[in-house]
Length: 206
Image (tube, rainbow, N blue to C red; front, side, top):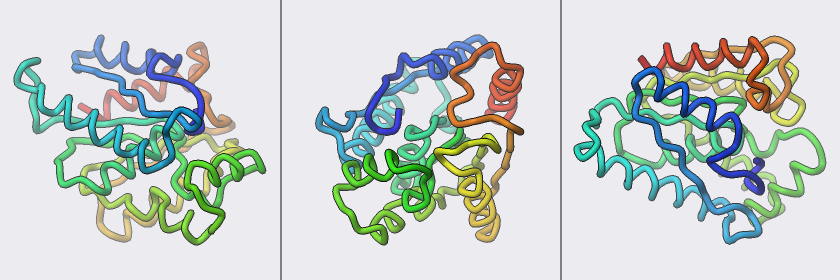
Protein backbone atom coordinates (compact mmCIF):
# COMPACT_ATOMS: atom_id res chain seq x y z
CA UNK A 1 0.00 0.00 0.00
CA UNK A 2 2.67 2.53 -0.97
CA UNK A 3 4.27 2.44 2.52
CA UNK A 4 1.15 4.19 3.88
CA UNK A 5 -1.88 1.86 3.60
CA UNK A 6 -2.87 -1.74 4.06
CA UNK A 7 -1.86 -4.76 6.11
CA UNK A 8 -1.00 -8.42 5.84
CA UNK A 9 -4.74 -9.06 5.43
CA UNK A 10 -4.87 -7.40 2.00
CA UNK A 11 -6.41 -9.49 -0.80
CA UNK A 12 -3.25 -10.42 -2.72
CA UNK A 13 -1.41 -11.34 0.48
CA UNK A 14 -4.24 -13.57 1.71
CA UNK A 15 -4.59 -15.12 -1.74
CA UNK A 16 -0.91 -15.94 -2.14
CA UNK A 17 -0.48 -17.12 1.48
CA UNK A 18 -3.51 -19.41 1.18
CA UNK A 19 -2.36 -20.88 -2.11
CA UNK A 20 1.15 -21.44 -0.75
CA UNK A 21 -0.27 -23.26 2.28
CA UNK A 22 -2.48 -25.38 -0.01
CA UNK A 23 0.66 -26.27 -1.98
CA UNK A 24 2.42 -27.51 1.18
CA UNK A 25 4.43 -24.45 2.17
CA UNK A 26 4.47 -23.05 5.69
CA UNK A 27 3.39 -19.48 5.02
CA UNK A 28 3.41 -16.40 7.26
CA UNK A 29 2.48 -12.83 6.33
CA UNK A 30 4.10 -9.92 8.13
CA UNK A 31 3.22 -6.28 8.75
CA UNK A 32 5.42 -3.21 9.03
CA UNK A 33 4.86 0.21 10.58
CA UNK A 34 3.09 2.44 8.10
CA UNK A 35 3.87 6.05 7.37
CA UNK A 36 1.96 8.32 9.78
CA UNK A 37 1.97 5.44 12.28
CA UNK A 38 5.63 5.60 13.26
CA UNK A 39 7.12 4.17 10.08
CA UNK A 40 9.59 5.96 7.87
CA UNK A 41 11.78 3.73 5.69
CA UNK A 42 14.38 2.80 8.31
CA UNK A 43 11.69 1.69 10.78
CA UNK A 44 9.86 -0.26 8.08
CA UNK A 45 12.97 -2.19 7.06
CA UNK A 46 13.74 -2.82 10.73
CA UNK A 47 10.29 -4.36 11.11
CA UNK A 48 10.96 -6.74 8.23
CA UNK A 49 14.33 -7.63 9.79
CA UNK A 50 12.65 -8.36 13.12
CA UNK A 51 9.86 -10.45 11.61
CA UNK A 52 12.31 -12.47 9.52
CA UNK A 53 14.46 -13.18 12.58
CA UNK A 54 11.39 -14.13 14.61
CA UNK A 55 10.10 -16.68 12.10
CA UNK A 56 13.55 -18.04 11.29
CA UNK A 57 14.04 -18.79 15.00
CA UNK A 58 10.85 -20.87 14.97
CA UNK A 59 11.70 -23.18 12.08
CA UNK A 60 12.42 -26.13 14.37
CA UNK A 61 9.21 -25.65 16.36
CA UNK A 62 7.13 -25.73 13.17
CA UNK A 63 9.09 -28.49 11.48
CA UNK A 64 10.36 -26.21 8.70
CA UNK A 65 13.65 -26.47 6.83
CA UNK A 66 15.81 -23.41 7.68
CA UNK A 67 17.69 -23.91 4.41
CA UNK A 68 14.52 -23.37 2.36
CA UNK A 69 13.20 -20.07 3.67
CA UNK A 70 11.94 -17.77 0.93
CA UNK A 71 10.43 -14.29 0.98
CA UNK A 72 8.02 -12.51 -1.36
CA UNK A 73 6.66 -8.99 -1.47
CA UNK A 74 4.15 -6.86 -3.39
CA UNK A 75 4.91 -3.27 -4.44
CA UNK A 76 6.19 -1.42 -1.34
CA UNK A 77 6.48 -4.78 0.41
CA UNK A 78 8.76 -6.00 -2.37
CA UNK A 79 10.90 -2.89 -1.93
CA UNK A 80 11.25 -3.59 1.81
CA UNK A 81 12.00 -7.26 1.13
CA UNK A 82 14.85 -6.36 -1.23
CA UNK A 83 16.25 -3.80 1.21
CA UNK A 84 16.11 -6.39 3.99
CA UNK A 85 17.74 -9.10 1.88
CA UNK A 86 20.46 -6.74 0.70
CA UNK A 87 21.48 -5.97 4.28
CA UNK A 88 21.34 -9.42 5.86
CA UNK A 89 23.78 -12.29 5.87
CA UNK A 90 20.97 -14.75 6.51
CA UNK A 91 20.48 -17.26 3.69
CA UNK A 92 17.35 -17.34 1.56
CA UNK A 93 16.22 -20.10 -0.78
CA UNK A 94 14.30 -17.81 -3.15
CA UNK A 95 13.11 -14.18 -3.33
CA UNK A 96 10.07 -12.91 -5.25
CA UNK A 97 9.39 -9.27 -6.17
CA UNK A 98 5.89 -8.63 -7.54
CA UNK A 99 5.52 -5.16 -9.12
CA UNK A 100 8.15 -3.99 -6.67
CA UNK A 101 9.36 -0.39 -6.45
CA UNK A 102 13.12 -0.63 -6.93
CA UNK A 103 14.15 2.90 -8.03
CA UNK A 104 12.67 5.53 -5.74
CA UNK A 105 13.98 8.37 -7.91
CA UNK A 106 12.14 7.02 -10.98
CA UNK A 107 8.57 6.60 -9.77
CA UNK A 108 5.51 7.72 -11.72
CA UNK A 109 3.22 10.57 -10.63
CA UNK A 110 3.32 13.48 -8.18
CA UNK A 111 1.64 11.53 -5.39
CA UNK A 112 4.44 8.96 -5.39
CA UNK A 113 6.99 11.75 -5.14
CA UNK A 114 5.23 13.29 -2.15
CA UNK A 115 5.02 9.97 -0.33
CA UNK A 116 8.69 9.23 -0.97
CA UNK A 117 9.73 12.59 0.46
CA UNK A 118 7.95 11.59 3.67
CA UNK A 119 9.08 7.95 3.70
CA UNK A 120 12.72 8.80 2.99
CA UNK A 121 12.66 11.97 5.10
CA UNK A 122 14.52 13.99 2.49
CA UNK A 123 13.98 15.92 -0.75
CA UNK A 124 17.41 14.92 -2.07
CA UNK A 125 16.77 12.74 -5.11
CA UNK A 126 20.36 11.51 -5.07
CA UNK A 127 19.66 10.13 -1.60
CA UNK A 128 16.49 8.52 -2.98
CA UNK A 129 18.59 6.73 -5.59
CA UNK A 130 21.26 5.66 -3.08
CA UNK A 131 18.63 4.26 -0.70
CA UNK A 132 16.62 2.48 -3.41
CA UNK A 133 16.25 -1.31 -3.40
CA UNK A 134 18.09 -1.48 -6.73
CA UNK A 135 21.24 -0.39 -4.91
CA UNK A 136 20.89 -3.31 -2.47
CA UNK A 137 19.53 -6.06 -4.74
CA UNK A 138 22.64 -8.22 -4.51
CA UNK A 139 21.51 -11.12 -2.31
CA UNK A 140 22.78 -14.32 -3.96
CA UNK A 141 19.42 -16.13 -3.70
CA UNK A 142 17.58 -16.59 -7.01
CA UNK A 143 15.15 -13.73 -7.55
CA UNK A 144 11.89 -13.80 -9.51
CA UNK A 145 10.80 -10.35 -10.74
CA UNK A 146 7.17 -10.09 -11.92
CA UNK A 147 5.83 -6.85 -13.39
CA UNK A 148 2.95 -5.64 -15.52
CA UNK A 149 3.83 -3.88 -18.77
CA UNK A 150 1.06 -1.28 -18.22
CA UNK A 151 2.24 -0.24 -14.73
CA UNK A 152 2.09 3.57 -14.47
CA UNK A 153 3.10 3.84 -10.82
CA UNK A 154 6.24 1.70 -10.95
CA UNK A 155 7.41 1.77 -14.58
CA UNK A 156 8.21 -1.65 -16.01
CA UNK A 157 11.65 -0.32 -16.96
CA UNK A 158 12.56 -0.57 -13.27
CA UNK A 159 12.06 -4.33 -13.38
CA UNK A 160 14.01 -4.60 -16.62
CA UNK A 161 16.96 -2.64 -15.21
CA UNK A 162 16.96 -4.70 -12.02
CA UNK A 163 17.06 -7.87 -14.10
CA UNK A 164 19.93 -6.55 -16.22
CA UNK A 165 21.87 -5.29 -13.19
CA UNK A 166 21.70 -8.62 -11.39
CA UNK A 167 22.53 -10.59 -14.50
CA UNK A 168 25.61 -8.42 -15.03
CA UNK A 169 26.75 -9.47 -11.55
CA UNK A 170 26.07 -13.14 -12.25
CA UNK A 171 23.15 -13.32 -9.81
CA UNK A 172 20.36 -15.76 -10.79
CA UNK A 173 17.33 -13.72 -11.79
CA UNK A 174 14.11 -14.47 -13.70
CA UNK A 175 12.00 -11.71 -15.23
CA UNK A 176 8.29 -12.30 -15.94
CA UNK A 177 6.55 -9.44 -17.75
CA UNK A 178 2.76 -9.67 -17.69
CA UNK A 179 1.31 -8.02 -20.77
CA UNK A 180 -1.19 -5.15 -20.36
CA UNK A 181 -1.37 -5.50 -16.57
CA UNK A 182 -1.36 -2.34 -14.40
CA UNK A 183 0.11 -1.91 -10.94
CA UNK A 184 -1.58 -4.08 -8.33
CA UNK A 185 -3.28 -6.50 -10.70
CA UNK A 186 -3.16 -9.31 -8.12
CA UNK A 187 -5.97 -7.51 -6.26
CA UNK A 188 -8.28 -9.12 -8.83
CA UNK A 189 -8.36 -12.86 -8.14
CA UNK A 190 -10.63 -13.46 -11.15
CA UNK A 191 -8.00 -12.45 -13.70
CA UNK A 192 -6.32 -15.36 -15.48
CA UNK A 193 -3.05 -13.41 -15.12
CA UNK A 194 -3.43 -13.59 -11.33
CA UNK A 195 -3.80 -17.37 -11.37
CA UNK A 196 -0.86 -17.70 -13.75
CA UNK A 197 1.28 -15.49 -11.53
CA UNK A 198 0.52 -17.53 -8.42
CA UNK A 199 1.29 -20.78 -10.22
CA UNK A 200 4.57 -19.28 -11.43
CA UNK A 201 5.53 -18.23 -7.91
CA UNK A 202 4.76 -21.69 -6.51
CA UNK A 203 6.79 -23.33 -9.27
CA UNK A 204 9.71 -20.96 -8.66
CA UNK A 205 9.73 -21.59 -4.91
CA UNK A 206 9.71 -25.35 -5.46
